[in-house]
Length: 423
Image (cartoon, rainbow, N blue to C red):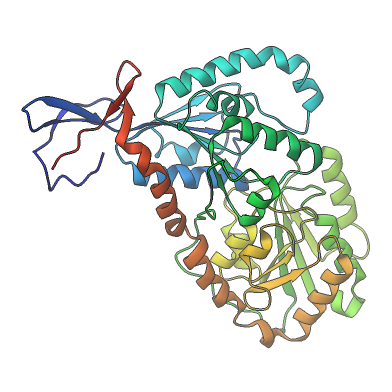
Protein backbone atom coordinates (compact mmCIF):
# COMPACT_ATOMS: atom_id res chain seq x y z
CA UNK A 1 0.00 0.00 0.00
CA UNK A 2 1.37 3.35 -0.94
CA UNK A 3 1.33 6.24 1.49
CA UNK A 4 0.64 8.70 -1.33
CA UNK A 5 -3.14 9.14 -1.55
CA UNK A 6 -3.16 12.22 -3.77
CA UNK A 7 -4.96 10.22 -6.45
CA UNK A 8 -8.05 8.01 -6.15
CA UNK A 9 -10.89 8.14 -3.63
CA UNK A 10 -10.43 9.35 -0.08
CA UNK A 11 -9.34 6.78 2.50
CA UNK A 12 -10.56 6.58 6.07
CA UNK A 13 -9.12 4.74 9.04
CA UNK A 14 -11.48 1.92 10.02
CA UNK A 15 -9.41 0.07 12.59
CA UNK A 16 -6.44 0.60 14.83
CA UNK A 17 -4.64 -2.27 16.54
CA UNK A 18 -1.09 -3.17 17.41
CA UNK A 19 -0.96 -4.84 13.99
CA UNK A 20 -1.05 -3.13 10.59
CA UNK A 21 -3.08 -0.04 9.83
CA UNK A 22 -6.26 -0.91 7.90
CA UNK A 23 -7.66 1.63 5.46
CA UNK A 24 -10.93 1.56 3.57
CA UNK A 25 -11.56 3.04 0.14
CA UNK A 26 -14.44 3.08 -2.32
CA UNK A 27 -13.85 1.49 -5.72
CA UNK A 28 -15.36 2.46 -9.04
CA UNK A 29 -18.46 0.33 -8.51
CA UNK A 30 -19.10 1.75 -5.07
CA UNK A 31 -17.95 -1.41 -3.31
CA UNK A 32 -15.90 -1.15 -0.17
CA UNK A 33 -12.48 -2.81 -0.18
CA UNK A 34 -9.98 -3.23 2.64
CA UNK A 35 -6.30 -2.53 2.13
CA UNK A 36 -3.79 -3.47 4.79
CA UNK A 37 -0.06 -3.44 5.07
CA UNK A 38 2.00 -6.52 4.27
CA UNK A 39 2.60 -9.20 6.85
CA UNK A 40 6.34 -9.73 6.89
CA UNK A 41 8.33 -12.15 9.03
CA UNK A 42 12.06 -11.45 9.47
CA UNK A 43 13.94 -14.51 10.78
CA UNK A 44 17.47 -14.34 12.17
CA UNK A 45 19.73 -17.00 13.64
CA UNK A 46 21.57 -14.71 16.08
CA UNK A 47 20.92 -12.50 19.08
CA UNK A 48 24.17 -10.59 19.64
CA UNK A 49 25.53 -7.51 17.87
CA UNK A 50 28.22 -8.86 15.59
CA UNK A 51 28.32 -8.18 11.86
CA UNK A 52 25.46 -10.41 10.67
CA UNK A 53 23.31 -9.23 13.59
CA UNK A 54 23.80 -5.57 12.71
CA UNK A 55 23.16 -6.30 9.03
CA UNK A 56 19.85 -7.90 10.03
CA UNK A 57 18.83 -4.82 12.03
CA UNK A 58 19.71 -2.52 9.15
CA UNK A 59 17.73 -4.62 6.66
CA UNK A 60 14.68 -4.69 8.93
CA UNK A 61 14.94 -0.89 9.15
CA UNK A 62 15.05 -0.70 5.35
CA UNK A 63 11.98 -2.93 5.05
CA UNK A 64 10.13 -0.79 7.58
CA UNK A 65 11.01 2.37 5.67
CA UNK A 66 9.84 0.81 2.41
CA UNK A 67 6.62 -0.57 3.91
CA UNK A 68 5.63 1.75 6.80
CA UNK A 69 2.20 0.11 7.21
CA UNK A 70 3.58 -3.43 7.32
CA UNK A 71 3.11 -5.79 10.24
CA UNK A 72 6.69 -6.93 10.84
CA UNK A 73 7.32 -9.92 13.09
CA UNK A 74 10.95 -10.52 14.03
CA UNK A 75 11.86 -14.11 14.96
CA UNK A 76 14.99 -14.77 17.05
CA UNK A 77 16.31 -17.92 18.77
CA UNK A 78 16.61 -16.15 22.14
CA UNK A 79 16.74 -12.76 23.79
CA UNK A 80 20.00 -10.81 23.50
CA UNK A 81 21.56 -7.38 22.84
CA UNK A 82 20.03 -7.20 19.34
CA UNK A 83 16.53 -6.84 20.80
CA UNK A 84 17.04 -3.23 21.92
CA UNK A 85 17.78 -2.15 18.33
CA UNK A 86 14.69 -3.89 16.95
CA UNK A 87 12.06 -2.85 19.47
CA UNK A 88 11.31 0.47 17.79
CA UNK A 89 11.16 -1.08 14.31
CA UNK A 90 9.36 -4.42 14.57
CA UNK A 91 5.66 -4.77 15.30
CA UNK A 92 6.52 -7.70 17.55
CA UNK A 93 9.53 -9.82 18.46
CA UNK A 94 9.13 -13.52 19.20
CA UNK A 95 11.63 -16.09 20.46
CA UNK A 96 11.53 -19.71 19.39
CA UNK A 97 13.95 -22.66 18.93
CA UNK A 98 14.97 -22.36 15.29
CA UNK A 99 16.70 -25.34 13.66
CA UNK A 100 20.04 -23.75 12.82
CA UNK A 101 22.98 -25.44 11.09
CA UNK A 102 26.03 -24.54 13.18
CA UNK A 103 29.50 -25.99 12.85
CA UNK A 104 29.79 -26.17 16.63
CA UNK A 105 27.57 -28.96 17.92
CA UNK A 106 26.80 -30.25 14.40
CA UNK A 107 27.04 -33.93 15.43
CA UNK A 108 24.52 -33.39 18.21
CA UNK A 109 22.21 -31.50 15.87
CA UNK A 110 22.26 -34.41 13.40
CA UNK A 111 21.36 -36.91 16.14
CA UNK A 112 19.36 -35.69 19.13
CA UNK A 113 18.65 -32.42 17.34
CA UNK A 114 16.63 -34.26 14.71
CA UNK A 115 13.92 -34.80 17.32
CA UNK A 116 13.30 -31.03 17.27
CA UNK A 117 13.15 -30.78 13.48
CA UNK A 118 9.46 -31.72 12.93
CA UNK A 119 8.31 -29.05 15.39
CA UNK A 120 10.60 -26.46 13.79
CA UNK A 121 9.27 -27.29 10.32
CA UNK A 122 5.68 -27.02 11.51
CA UNK A 123 6.31 -23.58 13.05
CA UNK A 124 8.02 -22.42 9.85
CA UNK A 125 5.09 -23.68 7.73
CA UNK A 126 2.59 -21.79 9.88
CA UNK A 127 4.69 -18.67 9.47
CA UNK A 128 4.77 -18.94 5.69
CA UNK A 129 1.04 -19.62 5.58
CA UNK A 130 0.19 -16.44 7.48
CA UNK A 131 2.73 -14.00 6.01
CA UNK A 132 3.10 -12.36 2.62
CA UNK A 133 6.89 -12.38 2.82
CA UNK A 134 9.41 -14.28 4.95
CA UNK A 135 12.85 -12.70 5.00
CA UNK A 136 15.50 -15.21 6.17
CA UNK A 137 18.84 -13.81 7.28
CA UNK A 138 21.85 -16.11 6.64
CA UNK A 139 21.91 -19.53 5.00
CA UNK A 140 21.91 -21.63 8.18
CA UNK A 141 18.22 -21.21 9.16
CA UNK A 142 17.49 -24.67 7.77
CA UNK A 143 13.88 -25.15 8.90
CA UNK A 144 12.62 -22.07 7.04
CA UNK A 145 14.65 -22.81 3.92
CA UNK A 146 13.21 -26.31 3.67
CA UNK A 147 9.65 -25.01 4.05
CA UNK A 148 10.24 -22.16 1.56
CA UNK A 149 10.08 -24.66 -1.31
CA UNK A 150 6.40 -25.28 -0.62
CA UNK A 151 5.48 -21.57 -0.61
CA UNK A 152 6.83 -20.28 -3.94
CA UNK A 153 7.48 -16.57 -4.16
CA UNK A 154 7.24 -15.84 -0.44
CA UNK A 155 10.86 -16.27 0.70
CA UNK A 156 13.85 -13.96 0.39
CA UNK A 157 17.12 -15.37 1.72
CA UNK A 158 19.98 -13.00 2.55
CA UNK A 159 23.34 -14.79 2.28
CA UNK A 160 26.14 -13.17 4.29
CA UNK A 161 28.64 -16.03 4.58
CA UNK A 162 31.17 -17.91 2.47
CA UNK A 163 31.39 -21.42 3.92
CA UNK A 164 34.07 -23.92 3.05
CA UNK A 165 34.22 -27.56 1.96
CA UNK A 166 31.41 -29.88 3.01
CA UNK A 167 29.51 -27.08 4.75
CA UNK A 168 29.37 -25.14 1.48
CA UNK A 169 28.10 -28.20 -0.39
CA UNK A 170 25.36 -28.81 2.20
CA UNK A 171 24.22 -25.18 2.22
CA UNK A 172 24.32 -24.93 -1.57
CA UNK A 173 22.05 -27.97 -1.78
CA UNK A 174 19.70 -26.40 0.76
CA UNK A 175 19.56 -23.12 -1.18
CA UNK A 176 18.80 -24.91 -4.43
CA UNK A 177 16.08 -26.98 -2.77
CA UNK A 178 14.43 -23.91 -1.22
CA UNK A 179 13.95 -22.13 -4.57
CA UNK A 180 13.98 -18.91 -2.55
CA UNK A 181 14.90 -15.60 -4.10
CA UNK A 182 18.42 -14.95 -2.85
CA UNK A 183 20.25 -11.74 -2.03
CA UNK A 184 24.03 -12.07 -1.82
CA UNK A 185 25.96 -9.37 -0.01
CA UNK A 186 28.83 -9.42 -2.52
CA UNK A 187 29.88 -10.83 -5.86
CA UNK A 188 32.33 -13.04 -3.99
CA UNK A 189 29.52 -14.61 -1.97
CA UNK A 190 27.45 -15.28 -5.08
CA UNK A 191 30.44 -16.82 -6.85
CA UNK A 192 31.18 -19.08 -3.87
CA UNK A 193 27.72 -20.70 -4.01
CA UNK A 194 27.68 -20.97 -7.82
CA UNK A 195 23.93 -21.50 -8.06
CA UNK A 196 22.35 -22.35 -11.41
CA UNK A 197 21.25 -19.39 -13.55
CA UNK A 198 17.59 -20.38 -13.19
CA UNK A 199 17.59 -19.45 -9.50
CA UNK A 200 16.78 -15.78 -8.98
CA UNK A 201 19.67 -13.99 -7.29
CA UNK A 202 20.80 -10.42 -6.63
CA UNK A 203 23.89 -8.72 -5.24
CA UNK A 204 23.12 -5.94 -2.76
CA UNK A 205 25.96 -4.61 -0.66
CA UNK A 206 25.11 -4.28 3.00
CA UNK A 207 23.90 -0.83 3.99
CA UNK A 208 25.84 0.00 7.13
CA UNK A 209 25.04 2.74 9.59
CA UNK A 210 27.87 5.19 10.09
CA UNK A 211 28.58 8.54 11.70
CA UNK A 212 27.25 11.72 10.14
CA UNK A 213 30.78 12.64 9.14
CA UNK A 214 34.26 11.16 9.33
CA UNK A 215 36.52 11.92 12.27
CA UNK A 216 39.57 14.06 11.48
CA UNK A 217 42.89 12.36 10.80
CA UNK A 218 45.55 13.22 13.38
CA UNK A 219 48.49 10.93 12.63
CA UNK A 220 51.63 12.69 11.40
CA UNK A 221 54.36 10.26 12.46
CA UNK A 222 55.19 12.02 15.71
CA UNK A 223 53.46 9.41 17.91
CA UNK A 224 52.90 5.64 17.66
CA UNK A 225 50.61 4.52 14.84
CA UNK A 226 47.34 3.27 16.33
CA UNK A 227 46.13 -0.01 14.84
CA UNK A 228 42.67 -1.40 15.54
CA UNK A 229 41.48 -4.96 14.98
CA UNK A 230 37.82 -5.47 15.75
CA UNK A 231 35.84 -8.72 15.54
CA UNK A 232 35.18 -12.13 17.01
CA UNK A 233 38.31 -13.82 18.37
CA UNK A 234 38.85 -16.85 16.14
CA UNK A 235 41.42 -18.47 13.90
CA UNK A 236 39.45 -17.33 10.84
CA UNK A 237 39.60 -13.63 11.79
CA UNK A 238 43.40 -13.79 12.07
CA UNK A 239 44.34 -12.13 15.36
CA UNK A 240 47.39 -14.37 15.49
CA UNK A 241 48.37 -13.40 11.92
CA UNK A 242 48.50 -9.74 12.94
CA UNK A 243 50.47 -10.53 16.09
CA UNK A 244 52.93 -12.62 14.05
CA UNK A 245 53.37 -9.67 11.67
CA UNK A 246 54.12 -7.28 14.52
CA UNK A 247 56.53 -9.79 16.06
CA UNK A 248 58.35 -9.98 12.73
CA UNK A 249 59.09 -6.24 12.69
CA UNK A 250 62.47 -4.96 13.91
CA UNK A 251 62.26 -3.57 17.43
CA UNK A 252 62.69 0.11 16.36
CA UNK A 253 59.72 -0.28 13.98
CA UNK A 254 57.63 -2.31 16.43
CA UNK A 255 58.06 0.37 19.07
CA UNK A 256 56.23 2.85 16.81
CA UNK A 257 53.03 0.79 16.80
CA UNK A 258 50.16 0.56 19.26
CA UNK A 259 47.55 -2.19 18.71
CA UNK A 260 44.06 -2.48 20.17
CA UNK A 261 42.21 -5.80 19.70
CA UNK A 262 38.47 -5.64 20.43
CA UNK A 263 36.33 -8.76 20.50
CA UNK A 264 35.48 -11.97 22.32
CA UNK A 265 35.47 -15.63 21.36
CA UNK A 266 32.17 -17.46 20.95
CA UNK A 267 32.05 -20.07 23.73
CA UNK A 268 35.82 -20.70 23.45
CA UNK A 269 37.60 -19.81 26.68
CA UNK A 270 40.74 -21.70 25.62
CA UNK A 271 41.22 -19.40 22.62
CA UNK A 272 40.78 -16.33 24.80
CA UNK A 273 43.34 -17.62 27.30
CA UNK A 274 45.83 -18.29 24.49
CA UNK A 275 45.38 -14.76 23.15
CA UNK A 276 45.89 -13.24 26.60
CA UNK A 277 49.09 -15.25 27.10
CA UNK A 278 50.41 -14.22 23.70
CA UNK A 279 49.82 -10.53 24.36
CA UNK A 280 51.56 -10.80 27.73
CA UNK A 281 54.75 -12.09 26.07
CA UNK A 282 57.92 -9.98 26.13
CA UNK A 283 57.78 -8.75 22.51
CA UNK A 284 54.17 -7.50 22.73
CA UNK A 285 53.76 -6.53 26.37
CA UNK A 286 52.71 -2.91 26.68
CA UNK A 287 52.09 -2.51 22.95
CA UNK A 288 48.88 -4.54 22.59
CA UNK A 289 45.63 -4.00 24.48
CA UNK A 290 42.82 -6.55 24.29
CA UNK A 291 39.29 -5.47 25.13
CA UNK A 292 36.04 -7.47 25.13
CA UNK A 293 33.31 -7.19 22.53
CA UNK A 294 31.82 -3.69 22.42
CA UNK A 295 28.29 -3.24 21.02
CA UNK A 296 29.06 0.40 20.21
CA UNK A 297 32.59 0.46 18.73
CA UNK A 298 32.52 4.02 17.39
CA UNK A 299 35.01 5.32 19.95
CA UNK A 300 37.48 2.59 18.93
CA UNK A 301 37.33 3.69 15.29
CA UNK A 302 37.85 7.31 16.34
CA UNK A 303 40.90 6.27 18.39
CA UNK A 304 42.46 4.35 15.50
CA UNK A 305 44.64 5.57 12.64
CA UNK A 306 44.30 2.34 10.62
CA UNK A 307 41.93 -0.62 10.92
CA UNK A 308 43.37 -4.08 10.18
CA UNK A 309 41.26 -6.96 8.85
CA UNK A 310 43.74 -9.88 8.47
CA UNK A 311 41.18 -12.61 7.73
CA UNK A 312 42.52 -16.08 6.90
CA UNK A 313 39.42 -17.23 5.01
CA UNK A 314 37.17 -15.27 2.67
CA UNK A 315 34.98 -12.64 4.25
CA UNK A 316 31.66 -12.46 2.44
CA UNK A 317 32.02 -8.66 2.40
CA UNK A 318 33.87 -7.11 5.33
CA UNK A 319 31.74 -5.03 7.65
CA UNK A 320 34.65 -3.82 9.78
CA UNK A 321 36.45 -2.44 6.72
CA UNK A 322 33.28 -0.59 5.70
CA UNK A 323 32.79 0.83 9.18
CA UNK A 324 36.41 1.96 9.11
CA UNK A 325 35.79 3.87 5.87
CA UNK A 326 32.64 5.40 7.33
CA UNK A 327 34.77 6.82 10.16
CA UNK A 328 37.42 8.06 7.72
CA UNK A 329 39.95 5.38 8.64
CA UNK A 330 41.90 3.45 5.97
CA UNK A 331 41.65 -0.34 6.18
CA UNK A 332 44.48 -2.82 5.74
CA UNK A 333 42.79 -6.05 4.64
CA UNK A 334 43.45 -9.52 3.34
CA UNK A 335 43.02 -9.69 -0.44
CA UNK A 336 40.36 -12.37 -0.23
CA UNK A 337 36.60 -12.71 -0.68
CA UNK A 338 34.46 -9.61 -0.54
CA UNK A 339 37.16 -7.49 1.10
CA UNK A 340 38.62 -6.70 -2.32
CA UNK A 341 35.21 -5.27 -3.28
CA UNK A 342 35.25 -2.93 -0.27
CA UNK A 343 38.55 -1.11 -0.36
CA UNK A 344 40.42 0.24 -3.37
CA UNK A 345 44.01 -0.88 -2.91
CA UNK A 346 46.31 2.11 -2.94
CA UNK A 347 43.47 4.63 -2.80
CA UNK A 348 41.30 4.00 0.28
CA UNK A 349 43.33 1.24 1.92
CA UNK A 350 45.73 -1.65 1.35
CA UNK A 351 45.24 -5.32 0.42
CA UNK A 352 47.81 -8.01 1.24
CA UNK A 353 47.83 -11.79 0.60
CA UNK A 354 45.92 -13.69 3.32
CA UNK A 355 47.71 -15.64 6.06
CA UNK A 356 51.05 -14.03 5.17
CA UNK A 357 52.42 -12.28 8.28
CA UNK A 358 55.57 -11.23 6.43
CA UNK A 359 53.53 -9.42 3.76
CA UNK A 360 51.48 -7.71 6.44
CA UNK A 361 54.65 -6.68 8.27
CA UNK A 362 56.15 -5.24 5.08
CA UNK A 363 53.04 -3.14 4.44
CA UNK A 364 53.03 -1.85 8.01
CA UNK A 365 56.68 -0.82 7.59
CA UNK A 366 55.84 1.13 4.44
CA UNK A 367 52.86 2.80 6.11
CA UNK A 368 55.07 3.94 8.98
CA UNK A 369 57.83 5.13 6.67
CA UNK A 370 55.68 7.54 4.63
CA UNK A 371 52.51 8.88 6.33
CA UNK A 372 52.10 11.55 3.66
CA UNK A 373 51.61 8.87 1.00
CA UNK A 374 48.28 7.77 2.50
CA UNK A 375 47.02 11.02 3.99
CA UNK A 376 44.07 11.16 1.57
CA UNK A 377 43.01 7.54 2.04
CA UNK A 378 40.54 8.34 4.82
CA UNK A 379 38.63 10.90 2.75
CA UNK A 380 38.57 8.57 -0.27
CA UNK A 381 37.21 5.76 1.88
CA UNK A 382 34.49 7.96 3.34
CA UNK A 383 33.38 9.02 -0.14
CA UNK A 384 33.23 5.38 -1.24
CA UNK A 385 31.22 4.45 1.85
CA UNK A 386 28.62 7.14 1.18
CA UNK A 387 28.25 6.15 -2.47
CA UNK A 388 28.22 2.36 -2.15
CA UNK A 389 27.82 1.06 1.41
CA UNK A 390 25.66 3.53 3.35
CA UNK A 391 22.21 2.63 4.67
CA UNK A 392 20.64 4.93 2.09
CA UNK A 393 22.44 3.18 -0.75
CA UNK A 394 21.19 -0.26 0.32
CA UNK A 395 17.69 0.79 1.41
CA UNK A 396 16.70 1.71 -2.15
CA UNK A 397 17.69 -1.75 -3.41
CA UNK A 398 15.88 -3.51 -0.55
CA UNK A 399 12.75 -1.44 -1.19
CA UNK A 400 12.81 -2.41 -4.87
CA UNK A 401 13.06 -6.07 -3.87
CA UNK A 402 10.06 -5.94 -1.53
CA UNK A 403 7.85 -3.69 -3.69
CA UNK A 404 6.59 -6.34 -6.18
CA UNK A 405 5.16 -8.35 -3.29
CA UNK A 406 3.26 -5.38 -1.87
CA UNK A 407 0.52 -5.73 -4.49
CA UNK A 408 -0.54 -9.16 -3.26
CA UNK A 409 -1.40 -9.72 0.41
CA UNK A 410 -3.12 -12.38 2.46
CA UNK A 411 -6.65 -11.79 3.68
CA UNK A 412 -7.80 -12.80 7.16
CA UNK A 413 -8.46 -16.36 6.01
CA UNK A 414 -4.94 -16.74 4.65
CA UNK A 415 -5.82 -16.67 0.94
CA UNK A 416 -4.37 -14.28 -1.62
CA UNK A 417 -6.12 -10.95 -2.13
CA UNK A 418 -5.08 -8.26 -4.59
CA UNK A 419 -4.86 -4.73 -3.18
CA UNK A 420 -7.25 -2.41 -5.02
CA UNK A 421 -5.67 -0.22 -7.67
CA UNK A 422 -7.25 3.21 -7.95
CA UNK A 423 -7.22 5.29 -11.13
